[in-house]
Amino acid sequence: MPVARLARTADLASLLDLYRVSEVSSPAEPIERAEQIWREMLSDRSVAVFVSADNAQIVASCMLISAPNLLRAGRRHGFLENVVTHPAFQGQGHGRAVVGAALAEAWTRDCHHVLMQSGRQDPRVHRFYQRCGFEPGLRIGYVARRPA
Image 1 (cartoon, one colour):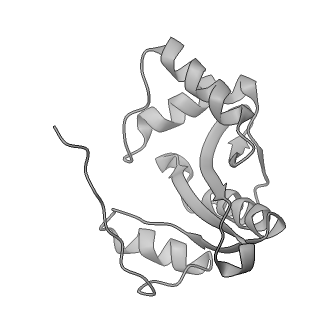
Image 2: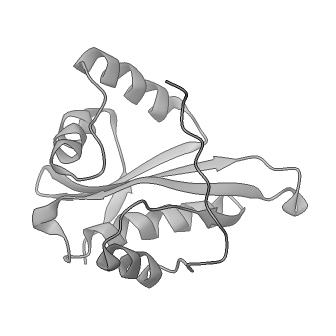
C-alpha cells in the first residue's frame, strides 16, 4: 500500500501538476501567487498537507485544517479539503493513504471529529469516502457563495 507523508516546500510544482489534471478545481496562478500561498500553508500550524507519490510524481493529496474550539470540551474541529488523486492512479491506494494520514493527524491533534464535503456526484467517490470511515447523512452541508 502507498505511504503518505507531509508535503514539503519542494513538492509545489508536482502538486500543481496533480491539480491541473484533476477534476476538482483549477490551481492558483500565476506561479508567484501559488508559491506565496504554499509558503503560507506550510508555515500555518493548523494546516497539514499530506501527499502520496509514485517515484517523484505526487499522485494524491489531502489537506487537514484543524481549528480550536470552545465547545466539544475544547477538542478541535477538523476539516478535510482538497482531496485529489491523479486519474491514472485511482484505485491503487494513494487516496486512502493521504486521507488515512490526515485522519491520524486529526486524532493526534485531539479533534472531536473531522468534517468533509464533496460536490462530486459520482457514487464511486462517495463509496471511497465511506470506506475511509466517513459517515454520510449525519449533517447537512451548506455553501455560501462569494457575491459577484
